[in-house]
Length: 198
Image 1 (tube, rainbow, N blue to C red):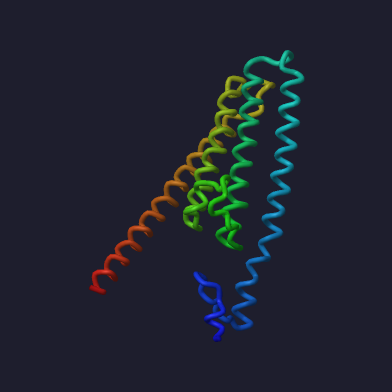
Image 2 (cartoon, rainbow, N blue to C red):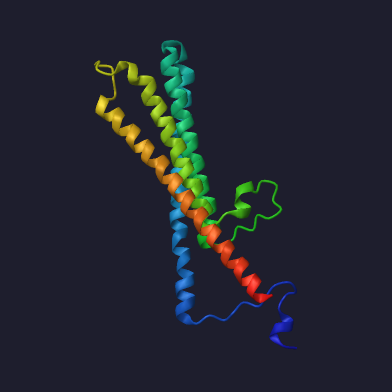
Protein backbone atom coordinates (compact mmCIF):
# COMPACT_ATOMS: atom_id res chain seq x y z
CA UNK A 1 0.00 0.00 0.00
CA UNK A 2 1.51 3.35 -1.05
CA UNK A 3 1.73 6.46 1.14
CA UNK A 4 -0.84 8.16 -1.15
CA UNK A 5 -3.43 5.46 -0.44
CA UNK A 6 -2.76 5.74 3.30
CA UNK A 7 -3.58 9.45 3.34
CA UNK A 8 -7.05 10.19 4.76
CA UNK A 9 -9.79 10.37 2.15
CA UNK A 10 -10.82 13.88 1.14
CA UNK A 11 -7.49 15.43 2.20
CA UNK A 12 -4.61 15.96 -0.21
CA UNK A 13 -1.23 14.69 0.91
CA UNK A 14 0.94 17.50 2.34
CA UNK A 15 3.87 18.39 0.08
CA UNK A 16 7.30 17.70 1.55
CA UNK A 17 9.03 21.04 2.14
CA UNK A 18 12.75 21.60 2.28
CA UNK A 19 14.45 22.98 5.39
CA UNK A 20 14.51 26.64 4.29
CA UNK A 21 10.86 26.74 3.07
CA UNK A 22 9.82 24.96 6.30
CA UNK A 23 11.72 27.55 8.36
CA UNK A 24 10.26 30.47 6.45
CA UNK A 25 6.70 29.11 6.59
CA UNK A 26 7.07 28.19 10.26
CA UNK A 27 8.18 31.74 11.09
CA UNK A 28 4.49 32.75 10.99
CA UNK A 29 4.22 31.30 14.52
CA UNK A 30 6.39 34.18 15.74
CA UNK A 31 3.21 36.26 15.47
CA UNK A 32 1.48 34.18 18.15
CA UNK A 33 2.91 36.20 21.10
CA UNK A 34 1.70 39.37 19.35
CA UNK A 35 -1.90 38.10 19.25
CA UNK A 36 -1.64 36.89 22.87
CA UNK A 37 -0.41 40.40 23.76
CA UNK A 38 -3.48 41.89 22.07
CA UNK A 39 -5.68 39.57 24.15
CA UNK A 40 -4.00 40.97 27.28
CA UNK A 41 -4.60 44.51 25.96
CA UNK A 42 -8.28 43.65 25.46
CA UNK A 43 -8.47 42.44 29.09
CA UNK A 44 -7.07 45.82 30.17
CA UNK A 45 -9.79 47.55 28.12
CA UNK A 46 -12.43 45.40 29.84
CA UNK A 47 -11.10 46.55 33.23
CA UNK A 48 -11.10 50.18 32.03
CA UNK A 49 -14.70 49.80 30.82
CA UNK A 50 -15.82 48.35 34.18
CA UNK A 51 -14.00 51.12 36.07
CA UNK A 52 -15.68 53.87 34.00
CA UNK A 53 -19.06 52.14 34.27
CA UNK A 54 -18.72 51.83 38.06
CA UNK A 55 -17.72 55.51 38.29
CA UNK A 56 -20.78 56.51 36.24
CA UNK A 57 -23.17 54.33 38.26
CA UNK A 58 -21.76 55.51 41.62
CA UNK A 59 -21.75 59.26 40.82
CA UNK A 60 -24.63 59.70 38.36
CA UNK A 61 -26.43 62.08 40.77
CA UNK A 62 -23.38 64.41 40.98
CA UNK A 63 -22.96 65.01 37.25
CA UNK A 64 -24.98 66.79 34.58
CA UNK A 65 -26.38 65.35 31.35
CA UNK A 66 -23.40 66.50 29.26
CA UNK A 67 -20.93 64.73 31.55
CA UNK A 68 -23.03 61.55 31.43
CA UNK A 69 -23.11 61.76 27.62
CA UNK A 70 -19.32 62.19 27.49
CA UNK A 71 -18.82 59.19 29.79
CA UNK A 72 -21.19 57.05 27.69
CA UNK A 73 -19.34 58.08 24.51
CA UNK A 74 -16.11 57.08 26.26
CA UNK A 75 -17.63 53.65 27.00
CA UNK A 76 -18.71 53.30 23.35
CA UNK A 77 -15.17 54.25 22.32
CA UNK A 78 -13.75 51.45 24.51
CA UNK A 79 -16.23 48.95 23.01
CA UNK A 80 -15.30 49.96 19.44
CA UNK A 81 -11.58 49.63 20.19
CA UNK A 82 -12.31 46.21 21.72
CA UNK A 83 -14.19 45.23 18.53
CA UNK A 84 -11.17 46.35 16.52
CA UNK A 85 -8.93 44.17 18.69
CA UNK A 86 -11.20 41.15 18.12
CA UNK A 87 -11.05 41.70 14.35
CA UNK A 88 -7.25 41.94 14.42
CA UNK A 89 -6.81 38.95 16.76
CA UNK A 90 -9.28 36.55 15.10
CA UNK A 91 -8.95 37.73 11.49
CA UNK A 92 -5.18 38.21 11.66
CA UNK A 93 -4.55 34.82 13.24
CA UNK A 94 -6.83 33.09 10.71
CA UNK A 95 -5.23 34.93 7.78
CA UNK A 96 -1.55 34.94 8.70
CA UNK A 97 -0.91 32.16 11.24
CA UNK A 98 -3.25 29.16 11.19
CA UNK A 99 -6.84 28.08 10.60
CA UNK A 100 -9.15 28.29 13.61
CA UNK A 101 -11.45 25.55 12.17
CA UNK A 102 -14.65 27.29 13.26
CA UNK A 103 -16.78 26.02 10.37
CA UNK A 104 -20.16 24.97 11.72
CA UNK A 105 -19.53 26.51 15.15
CA UNK A 106 -22.67 28.40 16.31
CA UNK A 107 -20.59 31.43 17.35
CA UNK A 108 -18.49 31.66 14.18
CA UNK A 109 -18.35 35.35 13.12
CA UNK A 110 -20.20 35.88 9.83
CA UNK A 111 -17.34 37.97 8.40
CA UNK A 112 -14.71 35.32 9.13
CA UNK A 113 -15.95 33.00 6.35
CA UNK A 114 -14.74 35.40 3.65
CA UNK A 115 -11.88 37.14 5.43
CA UNK A 116 -8.55 37.65 3.73
CA UNK A 117 -5.78 40.25 4.04
CA UNK A 118 -7.65 42.68 1.76
CA UNK A 119 -11.01 42.37 3.54
CA UNK A 120 -9.31 42.64 6.92
CA UNK A 121 -7.55 45.82 5.83
CA UNK A 122 -10.83 47.46 4.78
CA UNK A 123 -12.62 46.38 7.97
CA UNK A 124 -9.81 47.79 10.10
CA UNK A 125 -9.87 51.08 8.18
CA UNK A 126 -13.64 51.40 8.72
CA UNK A 127 -13.27 50.54 12.42
CA UNK A 128 -10.63 53.26 12.82
CA UNK A 129 -12.96 55.77 11.13
CA UNK A 130 -15.72 54.75 13.57
CA UNK A 131 -13.41 55.19 16.59
CA UNK A 132 -12.25 58.56 15.28
CA UNK A 133 -15.90 59.62 14.79
CA UNK A 134 -16.73 58.89 18.44
CA UNK A 135 -13.67 60.84 19.63
CA UNK A 136 -14.60 63.75 17.38
CA UNK A 137 -18.19 63.72 18.65
CA UNK A 138 -16.89 63.95 22.23
CA UNK A 139 -14.76 66.93 21.18
CA UNK A 140 -17.74 68.65 19.54
CA UNK A 141 -19.83 68.19 22.69
CA UNK A 142 -17.10 69.88 24.72
CA UNK A 143 -16.57 72.56 22.06
CA UNK A 144 -18.94 74.91 23.90
CA UNK A 145 -16.24 75.40 26.54
CA UNK A 146 -13.59 76.52 24.01
CA UNK A 147 -11.70 79.56 25.25
CA UNK A 148 -12.58 78.91 28.89
CA UNK A 149 -10.52 77.39 31.67
CA UNK A 150 -12.81 74.32 31.69
CA UNK A 151 -11.98 73.41 28.08
CA UNK A 152 -9.79 70.40 27.40
CA UNK A 153 -9.20 71.52 23.80
CA UNK A 154 -7.96 74.52 21.86
CA UNK A 155 -9.38 75.72 18.54
CA UNK A 156 -6.30 74.49 16.69
CA UNK A 157 -6.59 71.15 18.52
CA UNK A 158 -10.19 70.74 17.30
CA UNK A 159 -9.14 71.73 13.77
CA UNK A 160 -6.36 69.13 13.74
CA UNK A 161 -8.75 66.47 15.02
CA UNK A 162 -11.12 67.21 12.12
CA UNK A 163 -8.24 67.14 9.61
CA UNK A 164 -7.00 63.79 10.98
CA UNK A 165 -10.55 62.37 10.90
CA UNK A 166 -11.00 63.45 7.26
CA UNK A 167 -7.61 61.88 6.49
CA UNK A 168 -8.82 58.58 8.00
CA UNK A 169 -11.98 58.74 5.84
CA UNK A 170 -10.03 59.49 2.66
CA UNK A 171 -7.56 56.68 3.48
CA UNK A 172 -10.41 54.18 4.03
CA UNK A 173 -12.03 55.19 0.73
CA UNK A 174 -8.64 54.91 -1.03
CA UNK A 175 -8.01 51.42 0.40
CA UNK A 176 -11.51 50.25 -0.65
CA UNK A 177 -11.07 51.76 -4.14
CA UNK A 178 -7.65 50.14 -4.71
CA UNK A 179 -9.07 46.82 -3.49
CA UNK A 180 -11.99 47.12 -5.91
CA UNK A 181 -9.64 47.88 -8.82
CA UNK A 182 -7.57 44.83 -7.90
CA UNK A 183 -10.69 42.65 -7.68
CA UNK A 184 -11.89 43.83 -11.11
CA UNK A 185 -8.44 43.13 -12.61
CA UNK A 186 -8.40 39.60 -11.11
CA UNK A 187 -11.91 38.94 -12.44
CA UNK A 188 -10.96 40.11 -15.95
CA UNK A 189 -7.83 37.94 -15.89
CA UNK A 190 -9.90 34.92 -14.78
CA UNK A 191 -12.50 35.56 -17.52
CA UNK A 192 -9.73 35.93 -20.12
CA UNK A 193 -8.09 32.68 -19.02
CA UNK A 194 -11.48 30.91 -19.14
CA UNK A 195 -12.15 32.25 -22.63
CA UNK A 196 -8.67 31.19 -23.79
CA UNK A 197 -9.29 27.70 -22.39
CA UNK A 198 -12.35 27.31 -24.61
